[in-house]
Image 1: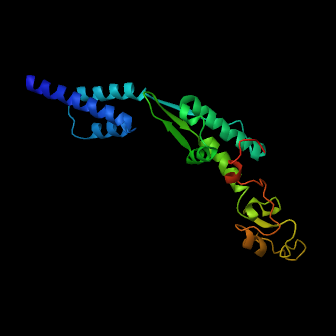
Image 2: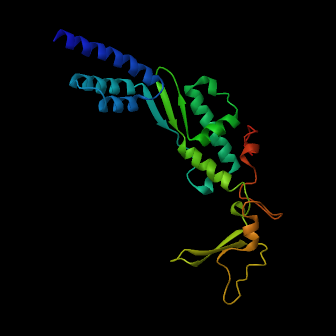
Image 3: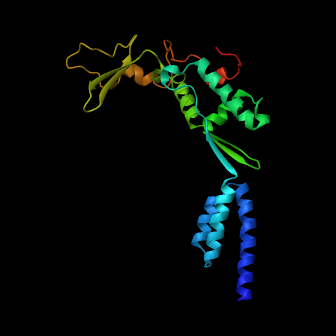
Length: 219
């Protein structure tokens, strides 16, 4: 009986040490799952792990960044630059060394979708909303026809989702009066310049992100 109790106590000590180390590298949930599935037969150990899981997970704080930009119409070079500066300031309030981070670094972190600050109380910051906004800005500031304000779309059959895509300004291959109309899909000109812009290309956002982050003043 004493020997069995000694083994349990020794097991507790080993698990406590392992759990503490796992907290530091963010693997607590995985460890608890593995331990519950393998090797253990003591009910007391299960309870011990559950209690430690609750106590140690309190050391990880989770928060989500909510940008002021709510819809596509709100996105501009000015609002995106302001958002990146906002992210830097908010993270800087929790991690002082981040307060003076280069916006190029901030952009990279936002596009990763999250950021973790390690410490006695680690903080996980969800940046998915900001990432979505950056993705939209990239879509309409890079590439070819797909980001151009002159990119036209005509719904030919809503039920079957048949659409025609063409250049509003100059696309000789798009003939609305032709019978039968040949408009489904991409016209040859749009197909050619969909990813690589032509000389008439005018993106919705004319400042690329890599250029935008080099300035600290709204444009």
